[in-house]
Image (cartoon, rainbow, N blue to C red; front, side):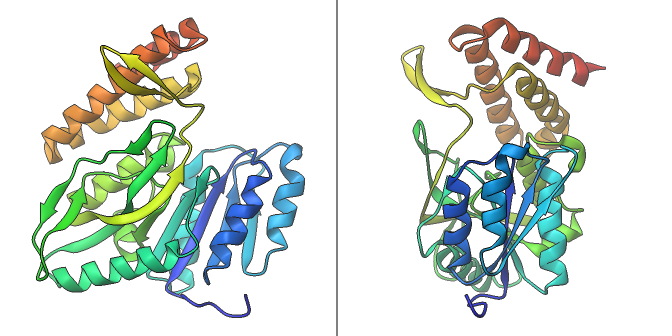
Length: 295
């Protein structure tokens, strides 16, 4: 890549103990004509070879940390770099995602077109892929139609960080990503802050990506197929704590979305305590998150 095809977009890929698939992701995103920053959250030495190889890809910068502090720190590194580089958009990704060869061009083109359709009446804070494929099939975002000069545009309350295009100025306005959350609900908190500031979270309905959520698998619960994430007890503690900490502001901003979120967290805790391995550890983790939040 001798020059940037799309200098208005910078990509941040957050990693921890990545496998060899990371090089394919980094190469694929970089080949789409944008600068890529890989922020590694203190991976063990087993990740040295793949991170070294990623750093050899033209247009890719690898930042390695000595202490594990969670994904928000890496996301904010990408935000600062995008701002300092004069980029309008920040594309964030986890190491477990896969994107089509035209993903960057498609999502940035959609973001530009939506912004021009809404003009100054509605501001775009972030754009997510409308089709996210994981272990359970397609991730279903609740959708609200918002009018524009060329017809309705799909919006939602929050999107996962991976594959999302963030408005750099908007994120800076709301203080960036909350590093106190560490790992879980960082994307949800950013979307909440953007919505509170009057920004919309838009969906590109035809845009597709693949994302692996933990050690997830599909299970049956009360006749319905649901996703058991397989997260550890410690992860469940932070998931519960962080989601509960956001709940008051979520209820104030969108009671319907807050209720959906708490229902999803409750189902996740139930699955961890009943159908997954290490049930007692995961049940205790969810309880710890509940107790920490109540203090």
